[in-house]
Amino acid sequence: MKNLTVYPGPVLLLFIMLLLVTACSKSDDQKEFEDRAFSPPQNYTAMQANGQPASPAQSDPDDWRVSPMYSGLIDISTPAYPNPVNLNGSFRIDIDIKGIESIPGIQIYVLQQAQNLFGPITQIDQSSLNPGIRVLVLDPASFAGSGSTQNAVGLNRLVIFDSRNNVISYGDVKVE
View 1 (cartoon, one colour):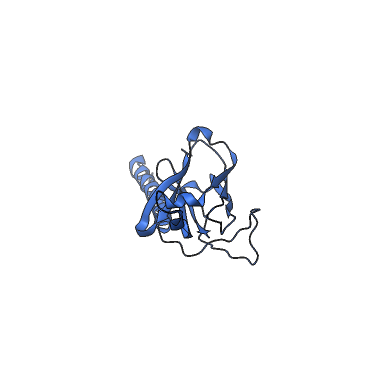
View 2 (cartoon, one colour):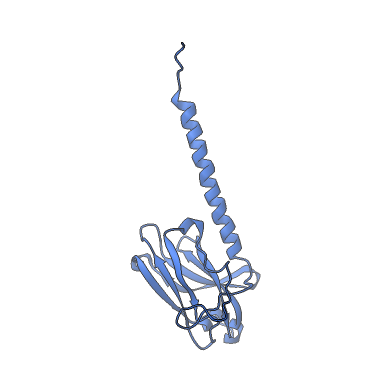
């Protein structure tokens, strides 16, 4: 019987190649998620002022999903509420932060026509990110920027980024 000699070089190389392929697929998943985040809004999840789903239920399964990069680290515990929101009112988004060591801040932008981002309309520094629920209170009139507040009326896509410009989540808010 012959002794079979296994050289660590080829085995190590194979292992590294498998890790690279796995890492690329995660990167591809994140890129696909981010591409979807920059698509125009088409629907929204209707929510009451108390954070409960509106009746009759109107849900957009594409709204407020968490990116592959942040899966398990952040949850959108309550999507934008109330939704629709009055132009002169405010709305909230509840974000459940599971840990702070890999979340370098949060910024929220509004996606305007032709994939232009406006904002940030709100920003949370890393120093203030603690585990637990963060309630973000937003003013829909800020979606208009320096233009007429009437420019904010309609369906608006919000994109939540970390401070390194990675998309965390996105969702649509209807302003009336």
